[in-house]
Length: 154
Image (tube, rainbow, N blue to C red; front, side, top):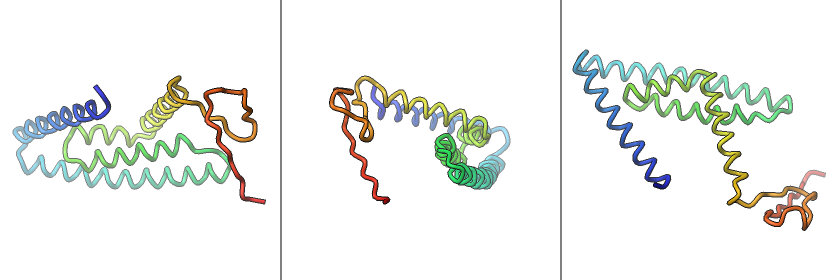
């Protein structure tokens, strides 16, 4: 099964689980209480995402100012966007995952995992490797893609 098939199956399964959970909670505490909880988690989650987003933004600026590459922080910001999307989606399962991703420790763990997965895919034998800059010579790597970098600063 390809990526699109897996993604469709995931969305279908999570949607069904969300709907089932919403109906069960509604039967326990009532429709209006369930609706109120969904709105409350959306508003609270939005405020927390905004706070964490600003904190991440300033952390990225600090690292850039000190000359560091904020790779984990940038990917953590993307995970934070995913968290916000999950929190504004009505449902308790998506809210739980969204609130977990708001925790800096969990968000950084997911960011590091995503970076590791991306790096593994970049050195996969099926992909050509990239040789950067003038150090690339003809015999270095026969499968390499030659990239020429032109620096415009004097």
